[in-house]
Length: 186
Image 1: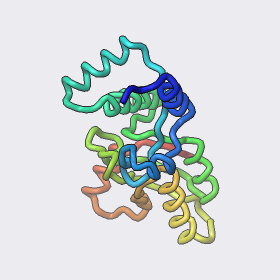
Image 2: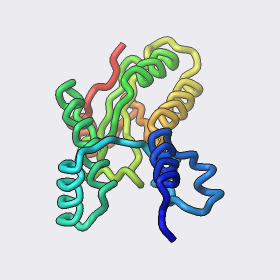
Image 3: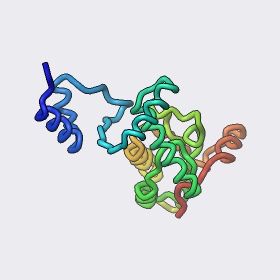
Image 4: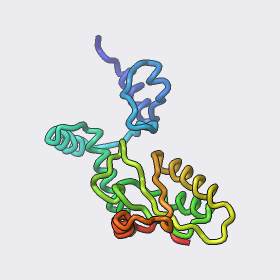
């Protein structure tokens, strides 16, 4: 069955406007989501030369065009974070993090662990933080757990939140504190 110009235009318009995931699921087409969080399809205009280079890279790496584009985007973000002085394997919404820290009485928040390395796995890794709270706040319990919950919301993944003042294991302390990078300081 030949494809009509109208069908091509309808598909192009749908791609330009973004896909309605609910409609795609109803129609039974589309790919499954990535990870625990919903994914979005984003239309990007590329030249034929750019597509040819992406496809060649994907073929050489035995991966998909989408993975090549995702890797390029994440590498670009990582370079920008390095330029800003914080080199992490995942994007940091520093404004949202600062707002959470101010709300829950944080004096200092540092990221450590796999998020600072190439061992970070976007589909399974959690994000590790060392936290110091401001002295004199009355409700440490709620500040701790509310901050943990808010960081998990910001990152869309599990967060391990370690009270820096409670670290007793010297081996853990040496590893965590030596690699930790500040993401917030009051």
